[in-house]
Image 1 (cartoon, rainbow, N blue to C red):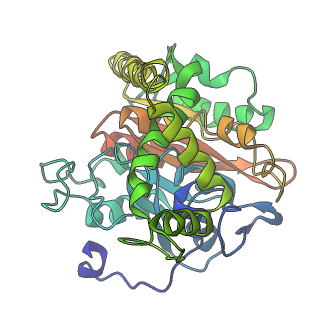
Image 2 (cartoon, rainbow, N blue to C red; image 1 turned 30 degrees about the vertical axis):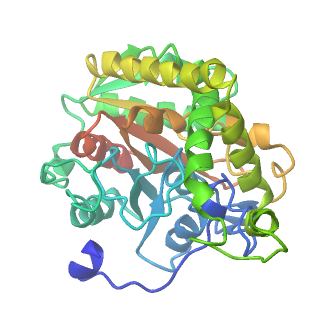
Length: 368
């Protein structure tokens, strides 16, 4: 509504993973989205259609939602800019809830400047969403021209360890080195609880999904498949109305919330979430922004990870932490692999730190 009021022209809807649950857009009932850089590869997810539309020149910008990386990861895979605002910066009113304490809407664009312009139009408090930040947003474009001089860029050691593709590492290190030469100060930092992030994320977010998607019962929301009894109605509706990955996450979330397992799994994951938030608070006391990979590897081929959900979940290691901590993050193209697949660098800013994250992203964009 705010984009329309600002004069934006909406040209269509884009493909995505069902209920935003997936990292490849292969969980869409409409079929997969192909990567404009190489149609044999996935576009990422869950907002893969938005990233492909922008990277493929179908639109100058698109919208996506980011619960654990669903804006930033497809942006990195397709070679465009993807901005996840801080939790509460953009209203969630009208979104189908997946993980209510994680979800955030944001823009995918061709340039960092365009991302700042769209966020300016989208952001702000909303009486329909009590989790929105109550203050009016700052001017997100004001600091774009400041460049790298004086910027303290943190490099978290846990994000550059085992499992990171060598070409992605080299590309990101190249951008950071360019920024250092342009006046930035590079600061080594540590985020010691990163190794628990994927487990904590998939326990907490699926628990919220289990509760949120319970409303899709064929009575109040969603498709309806009748049966001989109310029980049959629910079973038939939810069996036909949810795909395999959505069912998997609902079942996992219901399990961790069940009696006898709540303390062992959900409560423990929430405690880890707090520790991850404290890690970032300590890191941002030493630096202004963090430079990290977006993904551990380039875009996989279609069908490569569909039969291995664990591999798909582990691919979110560099993005879910921002959602666990409520941070903002920007994925910006920083080169391609030898095979021609796009590479993205992620700039993580503190809560409400979109202006400095966009400043770093714009400075890095100039050096890519």
